[in-house]
Length: 280
Image (cartoon, rainbow, N blue to C red; front, side, top):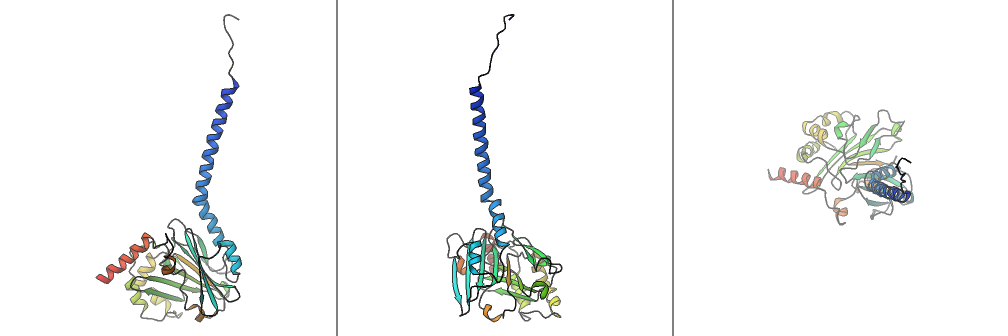
């Protein structure tokens, strides 16, 4: 035909190329999926499990969510404390002799993990604040606490606020805190100043005395900068006395015994700031 010859493309090289591209695409997709599960996906799945924590449930139910506890110890004759050391978070639970949870506390240990909790009961507590651990500051909370406590020692620090809403909170007590076993986001807090102000009053804030204390200069500056790293809930109608021996959240001196669970850089910065105050 006019000196032209027809040519055909062999289907074998084309098929091989398509197979090779499919293998590469599948490999890349698998790597992306594994990376998601190790990072953002893992944190979302953990946050979903933490959202199911509640007072009154059994310890067996909690173990189905968190696995077996890392630490367990008796507190007096009536209570058992358990601490679950997980990636990015420590969970402390306190249960009674029947295995019913009377308090749980969640402390973040990873600066990239920000689980969200409601300060109150969804649909029942008016104006309930959402608290993102490792992000929300105490000064962001619109409700006024009924109790404030500052702990300052030679090498340990802690701060907590207590909130109570009566029936709108199902008579539970809610706690926001800085626990030194967790990630401390701010390294410039003036712990001695806020501690000195706190020592001038009682631990529980009467309704008529709460606002003046919160407006004291050191406390106001502290709450403006301090980031919440611990959220806790105590069950309704429980006397404070059996829980008085138990710190809110995990004990740094306990969890630091585990390899790789020494204080984060943020915590060391906090303690370095504290030591500078003492030297000055």
